[in-house]
Image (tube, rainbow, N blue to C red; front, side):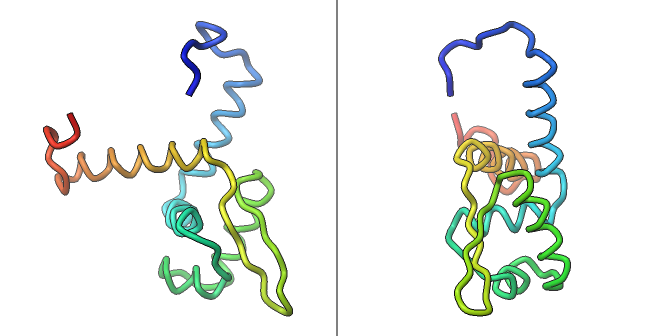
Length: 113
């Protein structure tokens, strides 16, 4: 993270880019897919099993994430393997999930101070 922001208020370009990132993270299935991919590379079928969704739904989410530049894929035979590629998004997701654990009471408030 930068020590100092360049602007006090983001310009339209940066506000839109940030908003697009949050839009990609606004779906629970995409959150689970991305978190799984930050743990390691996986195929569509493995991701579908991990996140509890149909492979076709996972494929659609992966297509959106790939267009947004958040995941990359490689082919091996007839299989495609995906990996998450954006460390900034990994930190955002980690903080959001940590926040969710505190809000839900899984982690007590004082434990992160």
